Length: 185
Image (tube, rainbow, N blue to C red):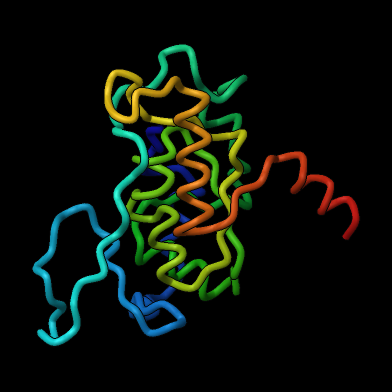
């Protein structure tokens, strides 16, 4: 969504000093390339193979026109201008996480494969940084095309993408589970 450049929540991101970005190494020492563009088969050292991401289980780029997050609200209704932070820049996000000691992230978004998973500050980036990540599966929709392999309808495509996230990237949970967890804390 468009964010006004002079919005207080946007300007607040510039108040943190830069902190070096994490290396992108996973805890077991493997490296994953988290960008969209293809890379050479070897990393910069030339001796470790590129462990490419498994292919998405559905082909993307034709979202269901009737799907969406219910009750979409304008930007100004979604943020608290006195306390929220807005950015799509990985360095700014990492600075905020470091200074606020943020270790856990919940994701919601419109297109699971495109924006939630592969955005420059999406699931792949958070997992690569070692951030505990959960996708709120009832607040995302598939960007799968039912006219492309595996030729499944949107609900089935959504289930395939949620399974993909759980197998290769992070946990998924319904919003209700998170709300119940918060009530018990």
